[in-house]
Image (cartoon, rainbow, N blue to C red; front, side, top):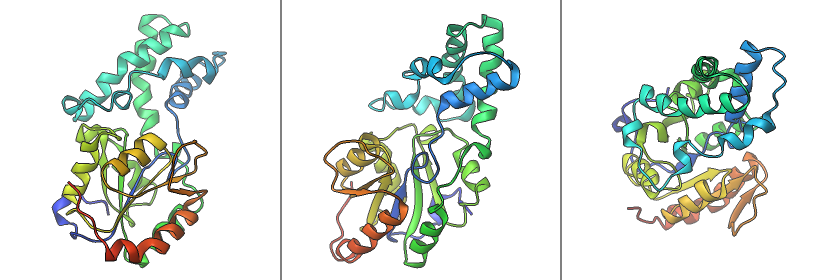
Amino acid sequence: MIISDISDISRSQPTILWDFGGTLVHFTNWRGALMDVLDEYEPGHGIDQEQIRPLLRDGFPWHKPEESHLHLSQPEAWWANLEPLFVKTYQRVGFNTKRSRFLAKQVRRHMIDHRRYILYEDTIPVLKYLVENGWRHVILSNHMPELPEVVKALGLSQFIEACFVSAVTGYEKPNPEAFRIALSALGNPGAIWMVGDNFISDIKGAETAGIPAILVHSSEPGDVKYRANNLFDAAKIIRENQLVQSASPFSNT
Protein backbone atom coordinates (compact mmCIF):
# COMPACT_ATOMS: atom_id res chain seq x y z
CA MET A 1 0.00 0.00 0.00
CA ILE A 2 1.31 3.46 -0.83
CA ILE A 3 1.67 5.25 2.43
CA SER A 4 0.51 8.79 3.05
CA ASP A 5 2.74 9.41 6.06
CA ILE A 6 6.30 9.28 4.77
CA SER A 7 7.60 9.10 8.35
CA ASP A 8 6.33 5.52 8.56
CA ILE A 9 8.75 4.09 6.02
CA SER A 10 12.09 2.60 6.96
CA ARG A 11 15.09 4.90 6.77
CA SER A 12 18.32 4.46 4.84
CA GLN A 13 17.11 1.39 2.92
CA PRO A 14 18.62 1.02 -0.58
CA THR A 15 16.23 2.96 -2.77
CA ILE A 16 15.30 3.34 -6.42
CA LEU A 17 13.58 6.53 -7.55
CA TRP A 18 11.41 5.78 -10.57
CA ASP A 19 9.95 8.18 -13.03
CA PHE A 20 6.41 7.16 -14.03
CA GLY A 21 5.29 7.97 -17.59
CA GLY A 22 7.64 6.48 -20.19
CA THR A 23 9.45 4.51 -17.49
CA LEU A 24 7.06 2.22 -15.60
CA VAL A 25 4.16 2.78 -18.00
CA HIS A 26 4.06 3.55 -21.69
CA PHE A 27 4.12 7.30 -22.18
CA THR A 28 0.64 8.81 -22.07
CA ASN A 29 0.59 12.30 -23.54
CA TRP A 30 -1.78 15.07 -22.64
CA ARG A 31 -2.85 15.70 -26.18
CA GLY A 32 -4.23 12.17 -26.18
CA ALA A 33 -6.51 13.09 -23.29
CA LEU A 34 -7.71 16.20 -25.11
CA MET A 35 -8.37 14.06 -28.17
CA ASP A 36 -10.32 11.53 -26.10
CA VAL A 37 -12.55 14.33 -24.86
CA LEU A 38 -13.23 15.32 -28.45
CA ASP A 39 -13.98 11.73 -29.42
CA GLU A 40 -16.48 11.51 -26.57
CA TYR A 41 -18.28 14.81 -27.05
CA GLU A 42 -17.54 15.79 -30.66
CA PRO A 43 -17.65 12.59 -32.76
CA GLY A 44 -16.51 13.20 -36.31
CA HIS A 45 -14.55 16.29 -35.22
CA GLY A 46 -11.88 15.79 -37.89
CA ILE A 47 -9.04 17.00 -35.63
CA ASP A 48 -5.84 15.00 -35.22
CA GLN A 49 -3.16 15.01 -32.55
CA GLU A 50 -0.69 16.86 -34.74
CA GLN A 51 -2.95 19.92 -34.64
CA ILE A 52 -2.94 19.82 -30.86
CA ARG A 53 0.71 18.94 -30.31
CA PRO A 54 2.22 22.44 -30.78
CA LEU A 55 -0.50 24.02 -28.65
CA LEU A 56 0.64 22.13 -25.54
CA ARG A 57 4.36 22.86 -25.75
CA ASP A 58 4.10 25.48 -23.03
CA GLY A 59 1.82 26.11 -20.07
CA PHE A 60 2.43 23.11 -17.80
CA PRO A 61 4.32 23.62 -14.52
CA TRP A 62 7.18 21.40 -15.74
CA HIS A 63 7.82 23.76 -18.61
CA LYS A 64 9.26 26.13 -15.99
CA PRO A 65 11.03 23.76 -13.58
CA GLU A 66 13.31 26.52 -12.35
CA GLU A 67 10.28 28.06 -10.62
CA SER A 68 8.52 26.69 -7.55
CA HIS A 69 4.80 26.02 -7.84
CA LEU A 70 3.89 25.75 -4.18
CA HIS A 71 0.74 27.79 -4.78
CA LEU A 72 -0.54 24.92 -6.94
CA SER A 73 0.00 22.14 -4.40
CA GLN A 74 -3.72 21.53 -3.89
CA PRO A 75 -5.51 19.46 -6.57
CA GLU A 76 -8.18 22.04 -7.39
CA ALA A 77 -5.62 24.82 -7.72
CA TRP A 78 -3.36 22.65 -9.86
CA TRP A 79 -6.09 21.72 -12.32
CA ALA A 80 -7.54 25.23 -12.35
CA ASN A 81 -4.13 26.50 -13.45
CA LEU A 82 -4.19 24.20 -16.49
CA GLU A 83 -7.78 24.79 -17.54
CA PRO A 84 -7.07 28.04 -19.44
CA LEU A 85 -4.45 26.17 -21.50
CA PHE A 86 -7.00 23.54 -22.45
CA VAL A 87 -9.61 26.17 -23.24
CA LYS A 88 -7.18 28.01 -25.50
CA THR A 89 -6.22 24.76 -27.23
CA TYR A 90 -9.81 23.89 -28.06
CA GLN A 91 -10.44 27.43 -29.24
CA ARG A 92 -7.49 27.30 -31.60
CA VAL A 93 -8.78 24.13 -33.27
CA GLY A 94 -12.13 25.74 -33.93
CA PHE A 95 -14.48 25.59 -30.95
CA ASN A 96 -16.20 28.64 -29.48
CA THR A 97 -15.40 29.83 -25.98
CA LYS A 98 -18.39 28.26 -24.26
CA ARG A 99 -17.82 24.86 -25.83
CA SER A 100 -14.08 25.06 -25.22
CA ARG A 101 -14.65 25.68 -21.52
CA PHE A 102 -16.92 22.67 -21.31
CA LEU A 103 -14.45 20.43 -23.12
CA ALA A 104 -11.54 21.68 -21.01
CA LYS A 105 -13.29 20.60 -17.81
CA GLN A 106 -13.46 17.02 -19.08
CA VAL A 107 -9.71 16.57 -19.48
CA ARG A 108 -9.12 15.85 -15.80
CA ARG A 109 -11.53 12.90 -15.81
CA HIS A 110 -9.74 11.34 -18.74
CA MET A 111 -6.24 11.89 -17.34
CA ILE A 112 -6.98 10.32 -13.95
CA ASP A 113 -8.52 7.21 -15.52
CA HIS A 114 -5.98 4.48 -14.76
CA ARG A 115 -7.00 2.62 -17.93
CA ARG A 116 -5.03 5.20 -19.93
CA TYR A 117 -1.80 3.92 -18.42
CA ILE A 118 -0.34 0.69 -19.78
CA LEU A 119 2.42 -1.01 -17.82
CA TYR A 120 5.51 -2.18 -19.63
CA GLU A 121 5.51 -5.96 -19.61
CA ASP A 122 8.63 -6.08 -17.45
CA THR A 123 7.48 -3.48 -14.87
CA ILE A 124 6.02 -5.81 -12.26
CA PRO A 125 8.60 -8.61 -12.69
CA VAL A 126 11.46 -6.12 -12.27
CA LEU A 127 9.90 -4.34 -9.29
CA LYS A 128 9.29 -7.70 -7.62
CA TYR A 129 12.81 -8.93 -8.35
CA LEU A 130 14.41 -5.83 -6.91
CA VAL A 131 12.24 -5.87 -3.78
CA GLU A 132 13.33 -9.45 -3.20
CA ASN A 133 16.90 -8.21 -3.41
CA GLY A 134 16.43 -5.55 -0.76
CA TRP A 135 15.50 -2.46 -2.77
CA ARG A 136 12.78 0.02 -1.90
CA HIS A 137 10.77 1.57 -4.74
CA VAL A 138 9.67 5.20 -4.78
CA ILE A 139 8.14 7.23 -7.58
CA LEU A 140 9.48 10.72 -8.29
CA SER A 141 7.42 12.20 -11.10
CA ASN A 142 6.40 15.44 -12.75
CA HIS A 143 2.73 14.63 -12.80
CA MET A 144 -0.80 15.37 -11.66
CA PRO A 145 -1.93 15.22 -8.01
CA GLU A 146 -3.95 12.03 -8.54
CA LEU A 147 -0.93 9.97 -9.57
CA PRO A 148 -0.82 7.93 -6.31
CA GLU A 149 -4.40 6.80 -6.93
CA VAL A 150 -3.50 5.78 -10.48
CA VAL A 151 -0.47 3.85 -9.20
CA LYS A 152 -2.68 2.00 -6.74
CA ALA A 153 -5.31 1.21 -9.40
CA LEU A 154 -2.59 -0.24 -11.62
CA GLY A 155 -1.67 -2.74 -8.92
CA LEU A 156 1.73 -1.19 -8.17
CA SER A 157 1.12 -0.26 -4.55
CA GLN A 158 2.41 -3.64 -3.37
CA PHE A 159 5.84 -2.54 -4.60
CA ILE A 160 5.82 1.27 -4.47
CA GLU A 161 6.27 2.63 -0.96
CA ALA A 162 5.80 6.32 -1.70
CA CYS A 163 5.09 8.81 -4.46
CA PHE A 164 6.67 12.25 -4.69
CA VAL A 165 4.60 14.09 -7.29
CA SER A 166 5.47 17.59 -8.48
CA ALA A 167 1.83 18.66 -8.34
CA VAL A 168 1.98 18.08 -4.59
CA THR A 169 5.57 19.03 -3.70
CA GLY A 170 5.53 22.15 -5.87
CA TYR A 171 8.84 21.37 -7.59
CA GLU A 172 9.45 19.70 -10.96
CA LYS A 173 12.48 17.72 -12.00
CA PRO A 174 15.22 18.67 -12.79
CA ASN A 175 14.87 21.31 -10.06
CA PRO A 176 17.27 20.18 -7.29
CA GLU A 177 14.55 20.83 -4.73
CA ALA A 178 12.41 18.03 -6.21
CA PHE A 179 15.20 15.57 -5.44
CA ARG A 180 16.11 17.14 -2.09
CA ILE A 181 12.55 16.79 -0.80
CA ALA A 182 12.48 13.11 -1.68
CA LEU A 183 15.95 12.37 -0.33
CA SER A 184 15.27 14.15 2.95
CA ALA A 185 12.00 12.31 3.50
CA LEU A 186 13.67 9.00 2.70
CA GLY A 187 16.45 9.52 5.22
CA ASN A 188 19.16 10.29 2.64
CA PRO A 189 19.89 6.64 1.81
CA GLY A 190 23.44 5.95 0.72
CA ALA A 191 22.51 3.38 -1.91
CA ILE A 192 20.16 5.08 -4.35
CA TRP A 193 19.41 5.22 -8.08
CA MET A 194 17.16 7.21 -10.38
CA VAL A 195 15.58 5.46 -13.38
CA GLY A 196 13.79 7.53 -16.00
CA ASP A 197 13.25 8.16 -19.69
CA ASN A 198 14.05 11.90 -19.84
CA PHE A 199 17.67 12.93 -20.22
CA ILE A 200 17.26 16.39 -18.70
CA SER A 201 14.61 15.88 -16.02
CA ASP A 202 15.60 12.44 -14.80
CA ILE A 203 19.24 11.89 -15.66
CA LYS A 204 20.86 15.32 -15.43
CA GLY A 205 18.54 16.30 -12.59
CA ALA A 206 19.48 13.24 -10.56
CA GLU A 207 23.19 13.51 -11.30
CA THR A 208 23.18 17.14 -10.19
CA ALA A 209 21.70 15.93 -6.91
CA GLY A 210 24.47 13.33 -6.57
CA ILE A 211 22.31 10.38 -7.61
CA PRO A 212 23.48 7.89 -10.27
CA ALA A 213 20.84 7.60 -12.98
CA ILE A 214 19.82 5.15 -15.68
CA LEU A 215 18.21 6.36 -18.90
CA VAL A 216 15.65 3.80 -20.05
CA HIS A 217 13.27 3.47 -22.99
CA SER A 218 14.96 6.38 -24.72
CA SER A 219 17.21 7.02 -27.68
CA GLU A 220 17.84 10.62 -26.64
CA PRO A 221 21.42 11.63 -27.37
CA GLY A 222 23.54 12.81 -24.50
CA ASP A 223 26.42 11.96 -22.23
CA VAL A 224 24.78 9.10 -20.32
CA LYS A 225 26.84 6.83 -18.11
CA TYR A 226 24.09 4.25 -17.71
CA ARG A 227 21.61 3.47 -20.46
CA ALA A 228 19.11 0.59 -20.57
CA ASN A 229 16.84 -0.61 -23.35
CA ASN A 230 14.28 -1.94 -20.86
CA LEU A 231 13.68 -2.37 -17.15
CA PHE A 232 15.38 -5.77 -17.07
CA ASP A 233 18.55 -4.06 -18.31
CA ALA A 234 18.14 -1.34 -15.69
CA ALA A 235 17.81 -3.94 -12.95
CA LYS A 236 20.97 -5.64 -14.18
CA ILE A 237 22.90 -2.36 -14.00
CA ILE A 238 21.67 -1.79 -10.46
CA ARG A 239 22.57 -5.29 -9.32
CA GLU A 240 26.03 -5.14 -10.93
CA ASN A 241 26.76 -1.91 -9.08
CA GLN A 242 24.99 -2.71 -5.81
CA LEU A 243 28.09 -3.68 -3.86
CA VAL A 244 29.90 -0.52 -4.92
CA GLN A 245 26.96 1.62 -3.93
CA SER A 246 26.58 -0.08 -0.56
CA ALA A 247 30.28 0.04 0.21
CA SER A 248 30.69 3.68 -0.73
CA PRO A 249 27.60 5.60 0.35
CA PHE A 250 27.57 9.27 -0.54
CA SER A 251 25.95 12.16 1.27
CA ASN A 252 23.02 13.98 -0.34
CA THR A 253 22.10 17.49 0.65
